[in-house]
Length: 241
Image (tube, rainbow, N blue to C red; front, side, top):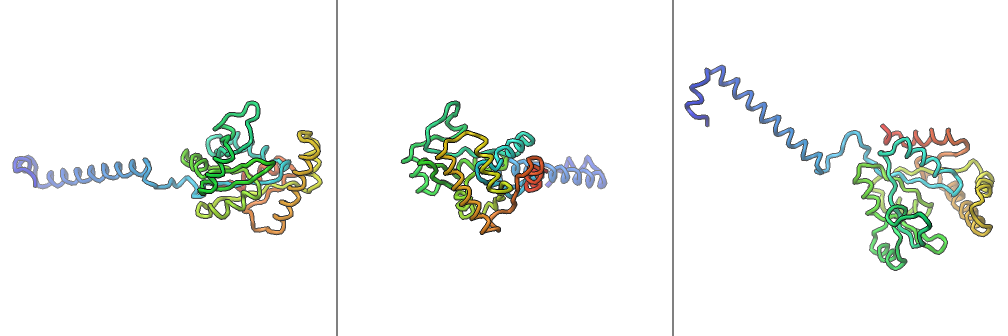
């Protein structure tokens, strides 16, 4: 209720105008407060951010996916982020713990796996590798799209445990297996035994994917790097706007 002295100071018209203005100010302050609360972590999604926040990409070693991802990150440095994986292998020269990998003891990593704290994990070359749920969430909390560059075994696991996050699955493949083999031999980065293991695994994975064509949302044939990158941009178009 207004004080009598205040009412005396306004004519009937002036008082109505005064009350109307005050009401508008109150509505504006309320809207501003609610908007600030929403932006500060009340779970309101930005209309500019896709609801899908994970991109899973796979392909055999030598298919060129790392080159494609490097180009993507150079073009959109703040839009995407890699989750830092765990591994039980020893650090290589120049690698930093928590930056390149979370270097872990096997017993420690196995405990985390048993507790269900990993989205995916696999054993390769007597070492464990895996992507923890916390590592993915850390990227998403920064407002970035999390890129998971993982093996087929990990892809199948992510499909089970992260279905509610609706990841986008991308498969990068060489034009032929023979092309892949030649690329790996030309790199000259592996000995004969490790090369044969990679080729054997690649043949199995490519065969499995061919038999399950609905496994991926997008398949990119890397016969020409520029064309393959354009295809990758098309696949990720919802995240690039």
